[in-house]
Image 1 (tube, rainbow, N blue to C red):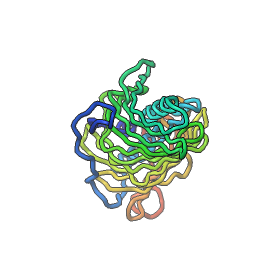
Image 2: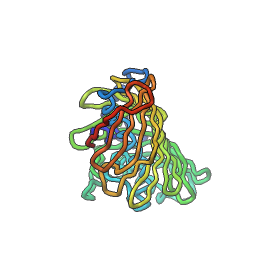
Image 3: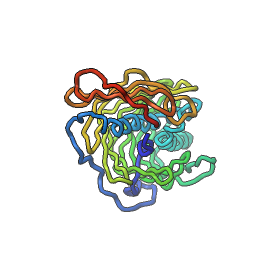
Image 4: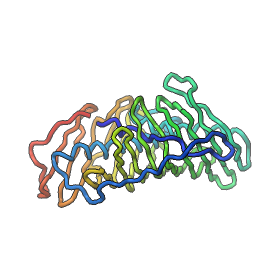
Length: 315
Protein backbone atom coordinates (compact mmCIF):
# COMPACT_ATOMS: atom_id res chain seq x y z
CA UNK A 1 0.00 0.00 0.00
CA UNK A 2 1.32 3.45 -0.90
CA UNK A 3 2.37 5.14 2.35
CA UNK A 4 1.09 8.49 1.04
CA UNK A 5 -2.43 7.43 1.91
CA UNK A 6 -1.63 6.92 5.58
CA UNK A 7 -1.16 10.69 5.92
CA UNK A 8 -3.76 13.29 6.58
CA UNK A 9 -2.28 16.59 5.35
CA UNK A 10 0.70 18.78 4.41
CA UNK A 11 1.07 22.58 3.93
CA UNK A 12 2.14 25.74 5.75
CA UNK A 13 -0.30 26.95 8.43
CA UNK A 14 -2.71 29.63 7.23
CA UNK A 15 -3.20 32.40 9.73
CA UNK A 16 -3.15 33.25 13.41
CA UNK A 17 -5.87 32.15 15.76
CA UNK A 18 -7.86 34.89 17.41
CA UNK A 19 -6.16 35.61 20.70
CA UNK A 20 -3.70 32.74 20.31
CA UNK A 21 -0.67 34.36 18.71
CA UNK A 22 1.44 32.97 15.90
CA UNK A 23 0.97 33.65 12.24
CA UNK A 24 2.11 33.03 8.70
CA UNK A 25 1.21 33.35 5.04
CA UNK A 26 -1.69 31.42 3.56
CA UNK A 27 -1.20 28.74 0.97
CA UNK A 28 -3.45 28.43 -2.06
CA UNK A 29 -6.58 26.34 -1.57
CA UNK A 30 -6.20 22.75 -2.72
CA UNK A 31 -8.68 21.84 -5.43
CA UNK A 32 -9.22 18.65 -7.41
CA UNK A 33 -8.70 19.27 -11.14
CA UNK A 34 -8.44 15.68 -12.34
CA UNK A 35 -10.78 13.48 -14.32
CA UNK A 36 -14.40 13.81 -13.17
CA UNK A 37 -16.00 10.91 -15.08
CA UNK A 38 -16.34 7.37 -13.74
CA UNK A 39 -13.24 5.23 -14.19
CA UNK A 40 -13.24 2.26 -16.53
CA UNK A 41 -11.38 -0.32 -14.48
CA UNK A 42 -8.70 -2.52 -16.00
CA UNK A 43 -5.64 -4.46 -14.89
CA UNK A 44 -3.43 -1.36 -15.19
CA UNK A 45 -5.39 1.16 -13.13
CA UNK A 46 -7.02 -1.12 -10.55
CA UNK A 47 -4.06 -1.23 -8.14
CA UNK A 48 -3.44 2.56 -7.86
CA UNK A 49 -7.17 3.09 -7.38
CA UNK A 50 -7.24 0.42 -4.66
CA UNK A 51 -4.35 2.19 -2.93
CA UNK A 52 -6.46 5.35 -2.82
CA UNK A 53 -9.68 3.78 -1.60
CA UNK A 54 -8.41 1.50 1.16
CA UNK A 55 -5.67 3.94 2.13
CA UNK A 56 -8.14 6.77 2.64
CA UNK A 57 -10.16 4.51 4.91
CA UNK A 58 -7.06 4.24 7.07
CA UNK A 59 -6.76 8.02 7.13
CA UNK A 60 -10.34 8.53 8.17
CA UNK A 61 -10.57 5.72 10.65
CA UNK A 62 -7.41 6.94 12.28
CA UNK A 63 -8.99 10.35 12.69
CA UNK A 64 -11.97 8.85 14.38
CA UNK A 65 -9.94 6.88 16.84
CA UNK A 66 -9.60 9.87 19.10
CA UNK A 67 -11.96 7.82 21.30
CA UNK A 68 -9.24 5.19 21.61
CA UNK A 69 -7.37 7.53 23.92
CA UNK A 70 -10.10 6.94 26.50
CA UNK A 71 -10.98 3.36 25.52
CA UNK A 72 -7.73 1.46 25.84
CA UNK A 73 -5.81 2.69 22.76
CA UNK A 74 -6.72 -0.33 20.64
CA UNK A 75 -6.51 1.58 17.36
CA UNK A 76 -4.05 0.08 14.86
CA UNK A 77 -0.74 1.91 14.73
CA UNK A 78 -1.06 2.53 11.00
CA UNK A 79 -4.11 4.73 11.66
CA UNK A 80 -2.10 7.11 13.82
CA UNK A 81 -2.01 10.20 11.59
CA UNK A 82 -5.58 11.30 11.99
CA UNK A 83 -5.78 9.84 15.47
CA UNK A 84 -2.92 12.16 16.41
CA UNK A 85 -4.95 15.09 15.14
CA UNK A 86 -7.98 14.11 17.21
CA UNK A 87 -5.82 13.43 20.25
CA UNK A 88 -4.57 16.98 20.07
CA UNK A 89 -8.15 18.24 20.11
CA UNK A 90 -8.98 15.87 22.96
CA UNK A 91 -6.05 17.11 25.05
CA UNK A 92 -7.21 20.70 24.56
CA UNK A 93 -10.80 19.74 25.42
CA UNK A 94 -9.74 18.03 28.66
CA UNK A 95 -7.63 21.01 29.67
CA UNK A 96 -10.42 23.46 28.89
CA UNK A 97 -13.02 21.47 30.86
CA UNK A 98 -10.84 21.84 33.94
CA UNK A 99 -10.34 25.60 33.50
CA UNK A 100 -13.79 26.65 34.72
CA UNK A 101 -17.02 25.24 36.12
CA UNK A 102 -20.61 25.83 34.97
CA UNK A 103 -20.03 28.66 32.52
CA UNK A 104 -19.17 29.25 28.89
CA UNK A 105 -15.42 28.67 28.64
CA UNK A 106 -13.73 30.64 25.89
CA UNK A 107 -10.16 31.45 26.91
CA UNK A 108 -7.20 31.09 24.58
CA UNK A 109 -4.66 28.56 25.78
CA UNK A 110 -1.85 26.22 24.74
CA UNK A 111 -1.46 22.47 25.09
CA UNK A 112 1.81 20.66 24.36
CA UNK A 113 2.15 17.66 22.03
CA UNK A 114 3.97 14.44 22.91
CA UNK A 115 6.05 12.41 20.48
CA UNK A 116 6.42 8.62 20.38
CA UNK A 117 8.88 8.74 23.30
CA UNK A 118 6.42 10.73 25.41
CA UNK A 119 8.56 13.88 25.23
CA UNK A 120 6.90 17.24 24.66
CA UNK A 121 7.51 18.44 21.09
CA UNK A 122 5.52 21.27 19.53
CA UNK A 123 2.24 22.74 20.68
CA UNK A 124 -1.36 23.60 19.85
CA UNK A 125 -2.66 27.11 20.39
CA UNK A 126 -6.41 26.99 20.69
CA UNK A 127 -9.48 29.07 21.41
CA UNK A 128 -12.17 26.63 22.54
CA UNK A 129 -15.69 27.42 23.73
CA UNK A 130 -17.64 24.85 25.76
CA UNK A 131 -21.15 25.99 26.69
CA UNK A 132 -22.43 24.04 29.67
CA UNK A 133 -26.02 25.12 29.11
CA UNK A 134 -26.20 23.61 25.59
CA UNK A 135 -23.22 21.19 25.55
CA UNK A 136 -22.14 22.89 22.33
CA UNK A 137 -18.43 23.17 21.56
CA UNK A 138 -16.63 25.27 18.95
CA UNK A 139 -13.13 26.53 18.44
CA UNK A 140 -10.01 27.12 16.40
CA UNK A 141 -6.78 25.15 16.68
CA UNK A 142 -3.32 26.12 15.48
CA UNK A 143 -0.91 23.16 15.38
CA UNK A 144 2.67 24.41 15.58
CA UNK A 145 5.32 21.75 14.80
CA UNK A 146 3.12 19.44 16.84
CA UNK A 147 4.67 15.97 17.00
CA UNK A 148 1.81 13.84 18.26
CA UNK A 149 2.75 10.14 18.43
CA UNK A 150 5.33 10.55 15.64
CA UNK A 151 3.11 12.58 13.31
CA UNK A 152 4.19 16.21 12.79
CA UNK A 153 1.26 18.59 12.23
CA UNK A 154 1.37 22.27 11.28
CA UNK A 155 -1.71 24.28 10.48
CA UNK A 156 -5.12 25.60 11.32
CA UNK A 157 -8.47 23.92 11.67
CA UNK A 158 -11.81 24.89 13.15
CA UNK A 159 -14.36 22.66 14.84
CA UNK A 160 -17.97 22.64 15.92
CA UNK A 161 -19.70 19.87 17.81
CA UNK A 162 -21.28 18.65 21.02
CA UNK A 163 -20.07 17.03 24.23
CA UNK A 164 -21.87 14.80 26.72
CA UNK A 165 -22.50 15.53 30.40
CA UNK A 166 -18.93 14.49 31.21
CA UNK A 167 -17.41 16.75 28.56
CA UNK A 168 -16.54 13.95 26.11
CA UNK A 169 -17.02 14.58 22.40
CA UNK A 170 -20.26 13.21 20.92
CA UNK A 171 -20.01 14.87 17.52
CA UNK A 172 -17.17 16.81 15.91
CA UNK A 173 -17.10 18.57 12.54
CA UNK A 174 -13.64 19.72 11.39
CA UNK A 175 -12.90 22.18 8.59
CA UNK A 176 -9.41 22.73 7.19
CA UNK A 177 -8.08 24.62 4.17
CA UNK A 178 -4.40 23.71 4.33
CA UNK A 179 -3.08 21.54 7.12
CA UNK A 180 0.46 20.17 7.13
CA UNK A 181 1.06 16.62 8.32
CA UNK A 182 4.13 14.52 7.69
CA UNK A 183 5.69 11.23 8.64
CA UNK A 184 9.38 11.22 7.86
CA UNK A 185 9.84 12.72 4.40
CA UNK A 186 6.27 12.06 3.21
CA UNK A 187 3.58 14.74 3.30
CA UNK A 188 0.12 15.47 1.93
CA UNK A 189 -1.91 18.68 1.83
CA UNK A 190 -5.56 18.31 2.71
CA UNK A 191 -8.49 20.65 2.17
CA UNK A 192 -12.07 19.92 3.16
CA UNK A 193 -14.25 18.66 5.97
CA UNK A 194 -14.41 15.65 8.24
CA UNK A 195 -17.35 14.85 10.51
CA UNK A 196 -17.22 12.26 13.29
CA UNK A 197 -19.91 10.99 15.65
CA UNK A 198 -19.28 8.70 18.63
CA UNK A 199 -21.44 5.92 20.09
CA UNK A 200 -19.77 3.70 22.67
CA UNK A 201 -16.91 1.86 20.96
CA UNK A 202 -18.07 2.85 17.48
CA UNK A 203 -17.47 5.98 15.44
CA UNK A 204 -18.98 7.07 12.13
CA UNK A 205 -16.92 9.34 9.89
CA UNK A 206 -17.86 11.26 6.75
CA UNK A 207 -15.06 12.79 4.66
CA UNK A 208 -15.27 15.32 1.82
CA UNK A 209 -11.62 16.06 1.17
CA UNK A 210 -9.15 17.01 -1.58
CA UNK A 211 -5.60 15.74 -0.98
CA UNK A 212 -2.41 17.04 -2.56
CA UNK A 213 0.51 14.62 -2.65
CA UNK A 214 3.41 16.97 -2.08
CA UNK A 215 5.82 14.51 -3.68
CA UNK A 216 3.98 14.07 -6.98
CA UNK A 217 1.89 17.24 -7.13
CA UNK A 218 -1.25 15.19 -7.81
CA UNK A 219 -4.56 15.96 -6.11
CA UNK A 220 -7.03 13.20 -5.25
CA UNK A 221 -10.50 13.51 -3.75
CA UNK A 222 -13.00 11.60 -1.63
CA UNK A 223 -16.68 12.49 -1.66
CA UNK A 224 -19.32 11.40 0.87
CA UNK A 225 -16.74 8.88 2.02
CA UNK A 226 -18.43 7.04 4.89
CA UNK A 227 -16.44 4.99 7.39
CA UNK A 228 -17.89 3.04 10.29
CA UNK A 229 -15.15 2.10 12.73
CA UNK A 230 -15.64 -0.24 15.70
CA UNK A 231 -12.98 -0.62 18.38
CA UNK A 232 -13.07 -4.21 19.68
CA UNK A 233 -9.96 -3.67 21.85
CA UNK A 234 -7.91 -6.59 20.46
CA UNK A 235 -8.85 -5.67 16.88
CA UNK A 236 -10.71 -3.00 14.93
CA UNK A 237 -13.48 -3.47 12.37
CA UNK A 238 -14.38 -0.96 9.68
CA UNK A 239 -16.58 -0.60 6.64
CA UNK A 240 -16.21 1.99 3.89
CA UNK A 241 -18.45 3.36 1.17
CA UNK A 242 -18.67 6.45 -1.00
CA UNK A 243 -16.76 7.84 -3.94
CA UNK A 244 -13.01 8.09 -4.57
CA UNK A 245 -11.51 10.20 -7.41
CA UNK A 246 -8.14 9.40 -8.95
CA UNK A 247 -6.82 12.34 -11.05
CA UNK A 248 -5.76 10.15 -13.99
CA UNK A 249 -8.64 7.67 -14.08
CA UNK A 250 -11.76 9.26 -12.55
CA UNK A 251 -14.00 8.00 -9.77
CA UNK A 252 -15.17 4.65 -8.43
CA UNK A 253 -18.04 3.77 -6.10
CA UNK A 254 -16.93 1.81 -3.03
CA UNK A 255 -18.82 -0.94 -1.21
CA UNK A 256 -17.63 -3.12 1.68
CA UNK A 257 -18.76 -6.72 1.14
CA UNK A 258 -17.11 -8.06 4.31
CA UNK A 259 -15.85 -5.82 7.17
CA UNK A 260 -12.16 -4.96 7.19
CA UNK A 261 -10.46 -6.32 10.33
CA UNK A 262 -7.19 -4.97 11.70
CA UNK A 263 -5.51 -6.61 14.69
CA UNK A 264 -4.19 -4.40 17.46
CA UNK A 265 -0.60 -3.42 16.67
CA UNK A 266 -0.68 -4.53 13.02
CA UNK A 267 0.18 -2.03 10.34
CA UNK A 268 -2.31 -3.36 7.77
CA UNK A 269 -5.65 -5.23 7.86
CA UNK A 270 -5.80 -9.02 8.00
CA UNK A 271 -9.17 -9.70 6.37
CA UNK A 272 -12.11 -8.08 4.57
CA UNK A 273 -13.54 -7.66 1.08
CA UNK A 274 -14.05 -4.34 -0.73
CA UNK A 275 -15.62 -3.83 -4.17
CA UNK A 276 -14.98 -0.88 -6.49
CA UNK A 277 -17.53 -0.20 -9.24
CA UNK A 278 -16.41 1.61 -12.37
CA UNK A 279 -17.95 2.67 -15.67
CA UNK A 280 -19.52 0.28 -18.20
CA UNK A 281 -20.04 -2.39 -15.56
CA UNK A 282 -16.32 -2.77 -14.83
CA UNK A 283 -15.43 -3.76 -11.29
CA UNK A 284 -12.51 -4.54 -9.01
CA UNK A 285 -12.66 -6.70 -5.90
CA UNK A 286 -10.08 -6.62 -3.10
CA UNK A 287 -9.94 -9.66 -0.81
CA UNK A 288 -7.56 -9.07 2.08
CA UNK A 289 -5.79 -12.34 2.85
CA UNK A 290 -3.28 -11.26 5.52
CA UNK A 291 -1.65 -8.20 7.04
CA UNK A 292 0.98 -8.38 4.29
CA UNK A 293 -1.05 -9.23 1.14
CA UNK A 294 -4.38 -8.87 -0.62
CA UNK A 295 -5.90 -10.58 -3.67
CA UNK A 296 -7.01 -8.31 -6.54
CA UNK A 297 -9.56 -9.37 -9.16
CA UNK A 298 -10.92 -7.21 -11.99
CA UNK A 299 -13.91 -7.43 -14.32
CA UNK A 300 -12.53 -5.50 -17.31
CA UNK A 301 -15.38 -6.07 -19.77
CA UNK A 302 -18.41 -5.49 -17.56
CA UNK A 303 -19.89 -8.95 -18.01
CA UNK A 304 -20.24 -9.51 -14.26
CA UNK A 305 -17.47 -12.12 -14.14
CA UNK A 306 -14.10 -11.47 -12.53
CA UNK A 307 -11.27 -12.30 -14.92
CA UNK A 308 -9.04 -15.26 -14.05
CA UNK A 309 -6.38 -15.26 -12.81
CA UNK A 310 -6.40 -12.52 -10.22
CA UNK A 311 -3.18 -11.25 -8.66
CA UNK A 312 -1.75 -11.37 -5.16
CA UNK A 313 -0.41 -7.95 -4.18
CA UNK A 314 1.73 -6.75 -1.28
CA UNK A 315 0.61 -3.94 0.95
